[in-house]
Image (cartoon, rainbow, N blue to C red; front, side, top):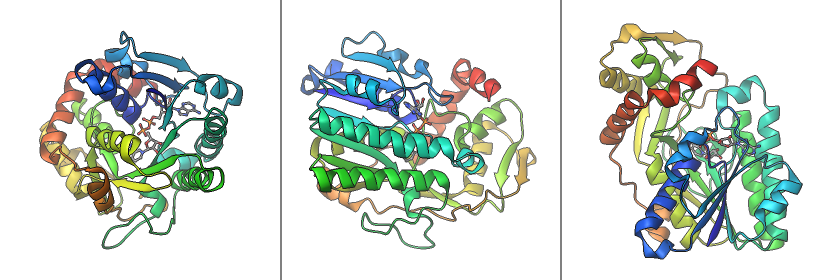
Length: 327
Ligand SMILES: NC(=O)c1ccc[n+]([C@@H]2O[C@H](COP(=O)([O-])OP(=O)(O)OC[C@H]3O[C@@H](n4cnc5c(N)ncnc54)[C@H](O)[C@@H]3O)[C@@H](O)[C@H]2O)c1
């Protein structure tokens, strides 16, 4: 099987590529697997995340923009499936400037869908987020919950989800949409809360906590998310949406306490800053459909996953120091 992975140099996409190709060395079910990564290498993309697979015979890398229709058409040819991660992904940046979010997340997705249709791609997995639903005070969203995004990032992702599903309904393209809660793990750009706080605390710098710190997020380890995407790629039903979560809900203040503890720092390192505009109070996904249909269950226990993640940032300064300095 030949898979085109967009955004494969990013946090989740690189985990997906590493996990598939490194497993293929051991697993005969993956023999003959080929992965082409298409990534523009924006500030969020780092080729170093793909170093562990750079010598793998099934791996190739193309540096380019998913909005470039001619390039996408050429690169897409000969692939059986697309797993689409490429996106502008940071909410705060979308509040500062929403143009790149609409361009990459909406227009870029449309360019990929058009090419997939023309090239006869057999499966298109569109990777999306719980943020498309907005905010929920109690309970959890099902795949049928109405989309009510609040940030420009979430609105651009919701637009791309709807386009992907429309290509299934209108053209019969085999599309599966996945929506996931907040991911954590290695190789996450140090602007998102966990790597931002960990790298700052390791450098003895204060960390900015938004508002009262009561906003609740549900956390899933990136390896669990990627296993869910692999399951959706193989067993998901065309035209369906699947949720992947980790089941661990934490207020940002609680998360901050855990990160202070893990890095041996105290609350004097926390600076209260003005809340993010339109800050969603709580996200929560019901992922029962993925459990029942795909056999998905999150495996990484949060305390262990967080400890390993902090240890990874402690041990891999050479990866994140240049990114932090260039920010
Ligand atoms: N991080 C999370 O917690 C989370 C949760 C749920 C869903 N998602 C979704 O998963 C996907 C991946 O998220 P991530 O956290 O790995 O993002 P990321 O910002 O770490 O990586 C995005 C990657 O896309 C590439 N890219 C950006 N614009 C491009 C373009 N125009 N053409 C080609 N490549 C481009 C970047 O270079 C980068 O490698 C996104 O679609 C995001 O919406 C993320």
